[in-house]
Length: 240
Ligand code: C5P
Image 1 (cartoon, rainbow, N blue to C red):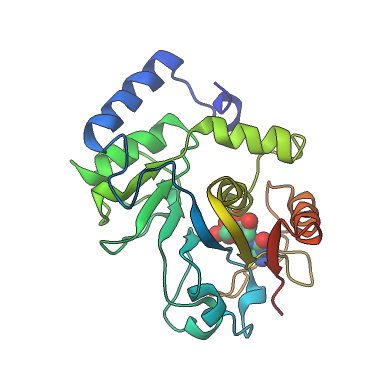
Image 2 (image 1 turned 30 degrees about the vertical axis):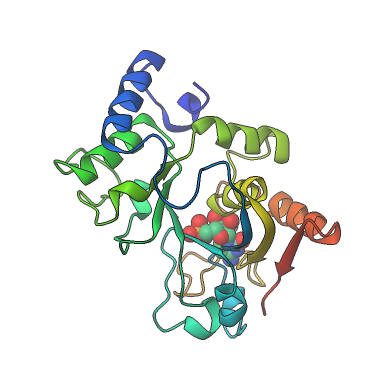
């Protein structure tokens, strides 16, 4: 399994398959929302968490899209003018989980078997396993609007889009590639490091000044985003 070396996964493929089977007992294998899953979405906004959204005034532009995809600790309240008000998809990991309203799709990018187990338990008995950092034991979200991305997708992005640079792609870059696969038109907001090269967020003050782009190939990702924008494959809103 590709993620074995990433997360020190001890359990084997057989165990993985058992967990996935359980997953499909709880969540509908074919999402029942909207039209059939083969239908593409017309316009999508991929909203990263970059500090360059601050003061951008992009809120209105973002809200105009059919799908608005946010991720991790994205905040709306207090930032509406810059980031918009709507969210159709919220991408998360157990470590960045937050409660959603009844109409927002929860998209999980599992990184290890425990992430899938967490999803099952967070919707049923509660997750009380060990984890560092601590993670939410229960989540409030619509069970029928849950999507789980195959770990094979992460590998595909890492190998094909980023030539295996650094440890693995960032959440935002994976979401962007996912959007290219399912949306006719992709607009990209909230990507780009601050003037010191750190991936700081619009909703908080950066504490770790040596963050850079973490374990991710931030510069390669940014170069690819610019290339896609130059080729007019995406619309890239660079922010301030
Ligand atoms: O930090 P977090 O992963 O929550 O941010 C979401 C995504 O937004 C990142 O994975 C990255 O792709 C993108 N980002 C960025 N520049 C920043 C902050 C985040 O490109 N300054």
